[in-house]
Figure 1 (cartoon, helix red, strand yellow):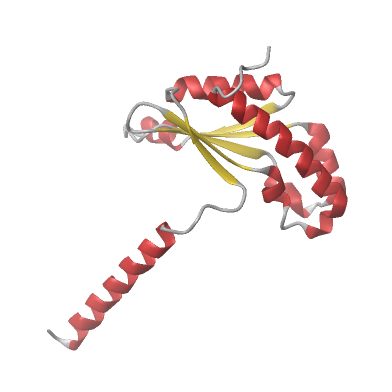
Figure 2 (figure 1 turned 120 degrees about the horizontal axis):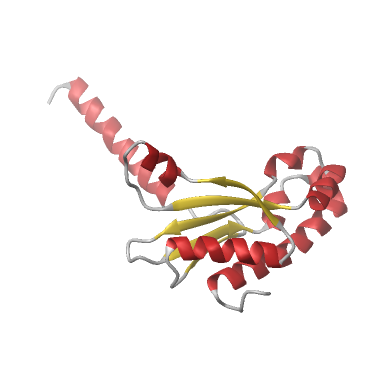
Length: 164
């Protein structure tokens, strides 16, 4: 084996090890994934209903699977739902302009191979934790939002009934 070939093989091995290590990293702090018995479309509807029932709004939607479908490709269903409310946005920005990049806070719905779907989100307190400039005001807002996001998730996945 030539020196160049050995170097290339070593580089490929190192890249494979790095990819495995990166793939094995723990989820970010405050990140939760809940596998449900609902299918993808149903879970999206349940998340939207729970968001509304808890006084927030779905303000953004993004879906790589819909984008791929428009190109004639099929990939497993996924949708990011950005959720917030203007009074929370104002309070957040009063506490920390920098934290504004985190709004809206997201729920992520993914289709699973068995036909079920999963709901993932990061707790608002974890999302806002890096913004120390927000002080107690941002921390208090985050705790308030943690409760709302947990309620939305519980209602959406069926742990508790969806509020009227």
